[in-house]
Amino acid sequence: MTFVFILFISYVFLANSLLNDIKTNSFYSHITKLAQTKLPLEKFFILDSIGIILGIRKIVSDIAWIQLLQYYGGHPPEDKHCNKHNHIECITKIQPGKYLDFIKYVRRVTILDPLHSFAYFYGVGALAWNLERPDEALEYLKEGLKNLEFQKDNPESDYWQLVKYQQAIYYKLGGKYKEMLNELKEIIQKGKAPNMVKAILANLYKKYGFYKEAILIWEELLDSGDPEYVERAQIQIKELKTLLSKTEKYKKEFK
Amino acid sequence: MKTLLNIILYSIKENFRTKVYLVLILFSIVLVFTGFLLMGLSGFEQPQRVLVNTGVTMIEIFCLTLVLLNSIGLFLQDVENKNIYVFLSKPISRTKFIIGKYIGLLVVIMCSIFIMFIIHFMFIKIVKWYITKEYILTLLTIFLKIATIASIALLSTISTTSHISAAVLSLLIWIAGHFTSEFIFIVDRIKLKNIQNFLKIIYYLIPNFQYFNLKDYFTSSEFISKFNLIKGILYCLIYNSICLFFTCSLFKKKDL
Image 1 (cartoon, one colour):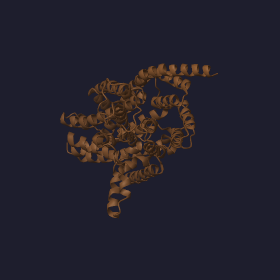
Image 2: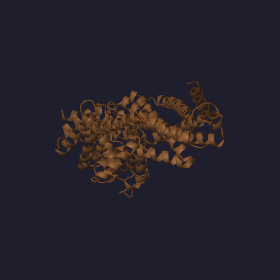
Image 3: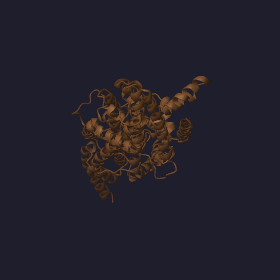
Image 4: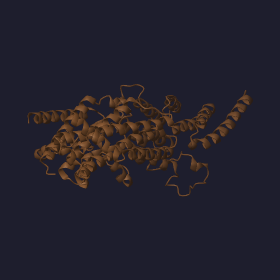
């Protein structure tokens, strides 16, 4: 009987100790946040709930991630006349005012797995530059910074990478495009940026006349073999080389 | 001690006789299909992450299936086939029988986790990826969770003597165990003290699986570094001992 009593006392003591660990570990607070967070996409409510109740959030988050890629990889639901064989404008992802549910899809991924840093990079990049909704990007970015706050002490962490995205967006809003480009360049040099962000920078380089830099990025994307960008990279490289030769010809004539 | 060892060996043999390897083969097939399917769908954006996550989740799900099928099925089968009398007619205490059965099951689970890890590791190497020490720690916590649910499954089998009700009860506790963080968050906000205290008792009765659910967070070394393994092992040991104590007490009183 004494043995059982000791067993119970030590159990309660340990259970309390685990509870304290949970309460003091900043990360567990993100898990409990689910109790007060509404899942952003009701149509996936059952799948998401299964993930939560069976303790398999990460794999459900991966499925949510694939669903996000499919949503953003497909034609914009708002654009009725885009089809499979449509022109190049439908392939490119620079489509302001479209993919209105993008933020819901990307938030769903990180609600299920708040540590999915890549989803923050991808979501913020797409919202701020491709979909031209920097306000939504900043709102989502704040969620990311809050969730990754525990990495703050490590200067190489994803938290600080996300801070760079924030700075780049503020430069964009303030019209300081050169600083914005430098910020994005640094993000890419760290090696954690999604291919989409690289394509964004290449497009921005092209827009501001830095053709050589743009070619380098598109060549890198071509070498990566990512089917999403191979075709686009080939077209862009050809186009940029023409633009570059024209500029150089013009410069020579001007001299 | 020798009799306990014999029961453990019998339990291991019995578990393997139920074609446990079929579960492992199934694991490989499901892993190949789901892992590579999801990898393919995720394109160039983090395909390896998807394979690692799928594998770890599959290991846990298959171990859970294995433990529910074997702990519930085998015991009741022993009773139905009257195999149990072979042991109980000998000078072996019922407590030793239960403990032996449980340890045998744990050995089988450990072997299964190890084999599934090898298969998963091979796939990870095929896609030229790597595993971290956090991954290994995650597998250890999966074992702790499965060991806990095994003791609960044994207890529910003895108390309900029905396949379905024992399986449902164990599964419900598995689900509730993953809800503990949210549960205590809600309980803390309840203003009625009596209800709050009652729910807190329930919180202590449910095993805290969320604390061991490292598989959902093992990508973050910062988070994993805060996890206390010794405390976790002690918690599991004590929880399982309590469950086994009740199982043995019930089994002693049971009229077979």
